[in-house]
Image 1 (tube, rainbow over the protein chains, first blue to last red):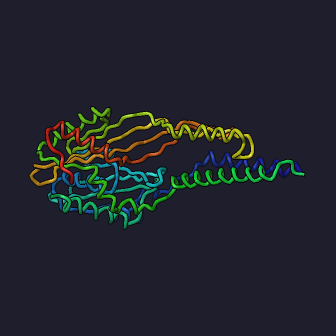
Image 2 (cartoon, each protein chain N blue to C red; image 1 turned 90 degrees about the vertical axis):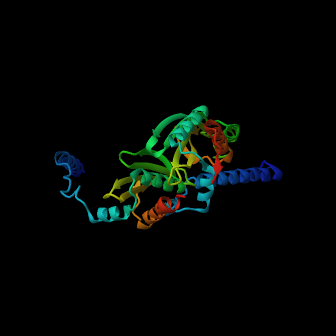
Image 3 (cartoon, rainbow over the protein chains, first blue to last red; image 1 turned 90 degrees about the horizontal axis):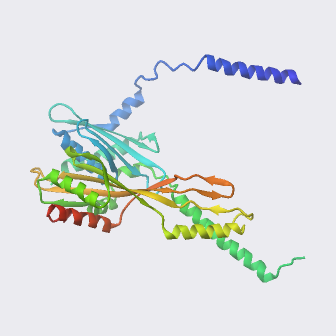
Length: 144
Length: 211
C-alpha cells in the first residue's frame, strides 16, 4: 500500500519542480493589438468640432458632473480628467472614468473615454453612446 | 413532562418572532447595500440630475474666473477644509476635512444588540455580538468654476459635497470583525449648499443666482 503512495508523492514533487524550472511562457501576441481592443477604442472615441482644448475639457467636466460623477483629478496640459461615482444605492462598487482630450487638426478635438465598473472595463457600446450624447449637450447646447 | 406554563411557552416564541423580524429587517438593510445596479444606469441623465444640478450650482455676474476660484478656496478653508487639488485652467478645486462619525443612535443599537446576544437569544448560545459602528468620516468637496457665456462675463460654480465613512472594529462571538470597512455617499442636504454659496457671495460681494 505504501509504494503507490510514495510514487504519487514523487510524481507530485517532480511536477512541482518542473513548474519551477519552466515557468509558463507568455504568448508572443500578449501585447499585440486585438480586434476587441480596436472595437473598444472605436466605441470609446469620438471627434467633436471644438477648437479650444480647455473648452472641451470644461464640457467633459460639466457632462461628468451632470451624470453624478465626482471630479477627482484634472490636468489641463495633458487634457486628462479622472472622475468616479458610487454605484448607488449599493455603496460597495465604484464606477471610474478617465477622459483624455487631444487636438485633432486645427479645429477638432478627439475625446476618448474609458470607464470601469467594479474594477472591470465597460465594453457596452450603448453606455459610451449615452456618455457622448450628454457630452454633446454639454459642449454645444448647455452653453448660453 | 413540561415544566413551563403555557403562558411562558407562548411568550418566548413571541420574543423570538420579534427578534427574527428584526434580523430580517437587518438583512434587508444590508442587502440594499449589495444591490448591483447595471452600468448603463450611471451614464444616463435622470429626473434627479436636474434637481442635483440646481442645488449644487450658482451663477455669478463676473468675468473674474480666477477670483471666483480663489474665493471658493478661501470659503472652503473657512469651513475647515484643506484644499488638496487645484487646476486653475479648468477651474477645479478639491478639498477634504476629517470629522468623527460617531452618533448616539448606532451606539444605542450596539449596546442593545450586545445585551440581547449576551442572553443567547440570537444564536441560542451565549455568543456576544459587538457590532462595528461608524467611527471616522472624511468630507470631500469637488468644485468647478466655469464661464457660461462666450464673452466670459458670467460664471457658474458647481460644488458637490460627499463623504467617506469608516467603521470601527467589532466581534461576533469568537470571530473578530476588523476595522476599516468603508462606505461612501453624496451629501444631499440643501442647507449645506446654501451655506456654502451664501459665504461665497459674501466673499466676492456678488449675488449668487440660482439656475
